[in-house]
Length: 406
Image (cartoon, rainbow, N blue to C red; front, side, top):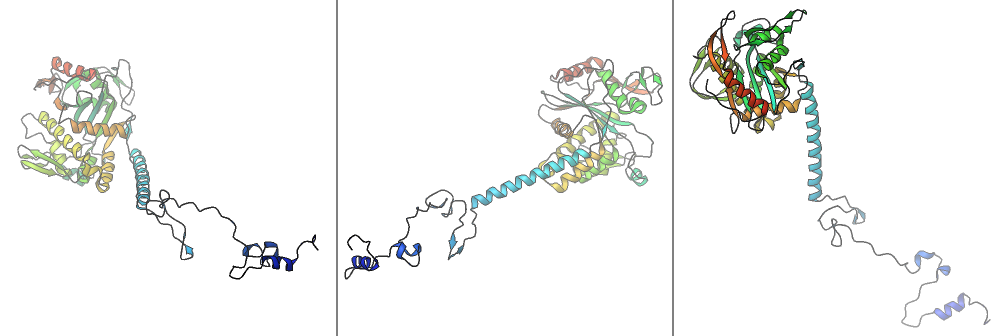
């Protein structure tokens, strides 16, 4: 028996505890319940939860969330304040980007383009800086008979230019220069819509627009100034009124009261807010002024500067209920050259805003006489070419623009 393996009774005899000792557990092979009732197996220590006292961002409320159990059930995820802020900021940025991109494509789709900047033999080379030709058209397109009556525009067919301005954007300040519509200049040779060729001839500058619309007007201005026109913007009557109304009016301060039956202007002296109808009457009024068209150009410069300030103010840009209607009406009233985009248009408005402050300025092309008697076109405006050339050269070379008194 000494060589035999001990049996159950032998094991029981040798392992029976002494009095006062705990009974040892059965070996696994003799335990009827299997291994689970034997001595517990060694386990790995549980790592600390991230963010708790043993790690960053866990149960200690310092970040992250825990998915442990409470009272025997699963614990609901708990977001820290930092995580909530991060998530909210991400959603806000994504939303703003989506709205911004959508708005950009919406606005871009509303741009009206025309092929007005055309190359031709002898066209001036591009200079430094950027030159915009801004044209105010008196086209009645889009106006009802009631509109024509209430706005005092009349019902003339076709379109003419009530105003012409060159906006130079450069490193030495931005300059807005008005060109009188009665300026007596050379209209270069041109071909009409029927294919008939016309020789170069002397006429008032607004005849170029009547003869050949925007393309011939651009060519005429380039021919007489030596400037390269980089961009073109044409403003119509109907959209002009809507833009001012969508902005909630434009603030102006007038030195004197204005009353003009022809334009419908009836404005008091002092600071006031003009609605669309009043604004249109103001920029068209000239009969009360001793200098007629020259005074009207000053009104137009004053108003465009005030309009640009209101359109680019935080109160407009940060208010979608003002911004979107204004942008919609503004783009409806404009016709741009085919290469001009939204960034170009924004640059134009901010430059126009700056012409009344800092290095910016507003001028009129230098004039030698405002009552020049022409052979066939009546009384016109004649430029002072000695002074005008200094201004044109400053635009071409983007140097400081000299000031002359007309």
